Image 1 (cartoon, rainbow, N blue to C red):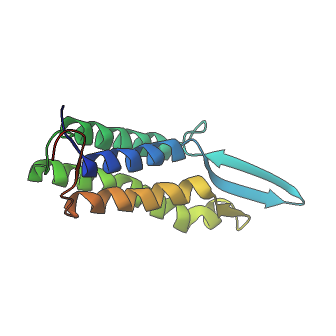
Image 2 (image 1 turned 180 degrees about the vertical axis):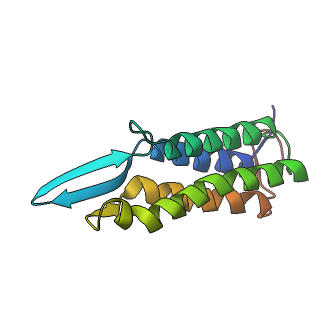
Image 3 (image 1 turned 30 degrees about the vertical axis):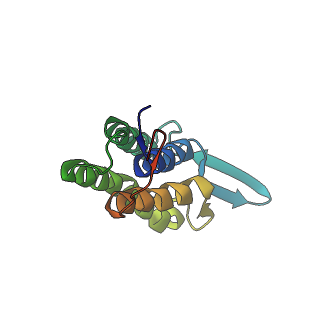
Length: 137
């Protein structure tokens, strides 16, 4: 039976949740009792497409190395560099959401998940995991 790297499975799962978060609400605007939300891939929004692409790239790299106990340094760097895109766009949108909405908006759950899971995918390749799942130990 083949062995699978626990670290790569976790990285893939975290990146999958980050990719799903691009479809969740990123911003909420409330005015006179009416509230509206938008996600990262709404019409005219390009930030969500970039974060989705980055998370998919992270999933692909982690899956390519899923049967290795430890990732190659190039894969670790690639995942960390790809994670910079969701981190940067998440921070940018959280910081500028008030100016874009004239003070009426706030960051919603999807944007926070993108930011936090972007940070997690940047850090996870560098954390030493020695556990393997499946197969004989």
